[in-house]
Length: 209
Figure 1 (cartoon, rainbow, N blue to C red):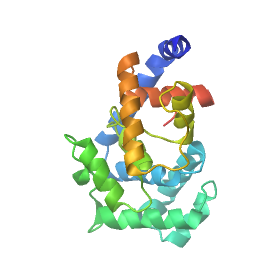
Figure 2: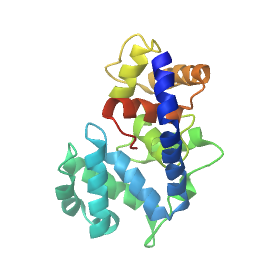
Figure 3: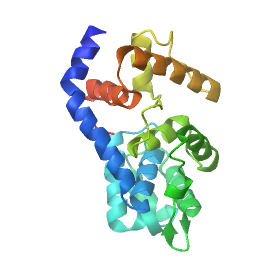
Figure 4: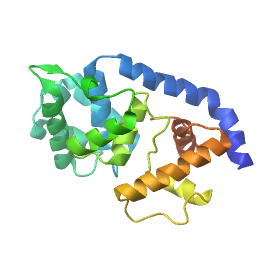
């Protein structure tokens, strides 16, 4: 635990700066917020850095906002199940693009982010609790949400928050582990969104998203 807190002290400024970037993401237009959602659609079983590059290339080409699945999928070579994920992107676009304009912010209840997460999981195909939490964190609403990917779960096992890494996560199991992590964060006085970036940084050597 002392080692973790020491590392946090070293990375705290960088992490808080990155979280400020996430808050600024939400202040941008709905297209930018939609891009963050699409990034999170790509990340399961894929490298986050490569997914980010793919989204940027799709933005530059205009295909992220207008392309058909068969036009999008060649850009997703870094993501597994690229054809399925291309369909997820176009499906999300149909949900949030009305009369040529994106209206994704209208679906975010800033006062009840847990309700918002439930809505996203229910309505956006390809999004589970992990991806919905990741998306909300990346637009500045992640201080009470856990992003339970395999790297985080390994750390939670290491620190005794969970006894073993589950093979799969039901909704109840996800929320149960999230609650335990929330208690742990209170104990060490580090926000959940900060701890996620801290674990990521320790695994990879840099703070990303």
